[in-house]
Image (cartoon, rainbow, N blue to C red; front, top):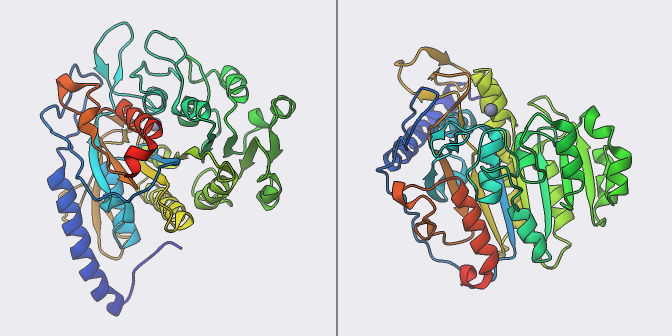
Length: 406
Ligand SMILES: [Zn+2]
C-alpha cells in the first residue's frame, strides 16, 4: 500500500512527479504565510496580516444533508508536504478550496492567547468557543457548551466520532464529553457514554471496555470484533472498539470510517461525522519522521475512501483540517536541514524544532460547498480565521442547507 520508488525507469517518472509536487508545494507556500514562532506564549497572532479568502467555485444545485470533518491531529502544512513526498503524488484534498487557520487557545483568566493543546483546539472546532488548555466541551469560564454534533442531533441527524486514539483522547472527547481536565478519564467516559452520540468508535482500551455494562445501559450495542461490525449497522447507537492505534494496527482508519458512513447513512435526515487520525501528532511528539509520514498516508487514504464512498453524491460536505501543528516541522528538497530521509527514493531533508505543539497555522480544505469565511468575523479585529470558525462554517451549512447547495 505504501509506495517506495526504486529503479531507473521509475526514477525518471519520479523526477517528473517530483517536479510537479515541488511546484505544488511552492504554490501552497505562495498561498500561505505559515510562520512558526517558537516560544511558549504569544499575545497576538503570528500571522495577523494575512487575509484569508477561500476561492469561489461553482456550486451544484442540491441540498446539503451531511458533514464529514476529518482531523489530522498535529498536521501542519509541512506534514502534508512530507506525506505527499512519501506517497509520490499530490494528495487529492490538497487541491480543494483552502484557507489557513489560527489555532491558539486562551490563557487562564486572561484574554491572552497561547499555544493550544488538543483539548482546547478540539473544543474550538467542536463548539466554536476558544477555550483554555485541557478543557473539553467547556468554554473559557468552564461552562458546558453544545457541540456541532449536539446541533446536528437537534436537527434529527445522526452523529458519529471515529478515532485512532482511545475514545477518551482529547479530540474525540472534545466532540462528545465535558471535563475541565483532559486527564480525568472517568469523568470523560461518564459524560461521553451519556452523550447520545450515535456512533462512538475508537482504539481498544481496557478503561473503555470496563464500562461495557454502562455502555449497554445507555442503549449502545457494543462491538470489538471488526468482522462482526456489519451486524451492528442497523442499530440506533453503537460503541465500536477496534485495533486502530498506530501504524501497526490491524484495522485501517479508512475501513472503520467507511463502516461509520454506512452506519450513519441510514438516517434520512443526514449525519455529521468527525474522523481523527491521532498518530500524526503522537509520532510528531516523538520527532519520528518516517512513522509520521505513514500516518499522513493513513489520513489521505481515509479522505480518499470517504470520497470514493460518496461517489457522485452532492449532499455531503467534507472538511479536512488539523487541531494544531506539532513539532515545528520544516522540510526541504535541498540539504539545508539537518536530517535526511531517503525512504522516498529522492532524499528529503527535514528538521523538528520542537517536541510539542507550535502555533503555526494549519490548513482547512473544503469539498462540496462554496465556503466564504469572510462572513465569520469571530476574530475580525485580527483579520484571521480561527479554528473556532470551522464550527461556525459547519453550523451555517446545517442551518442553511439549501442556500449552501444552490
Ligand atoms: Zn499533541
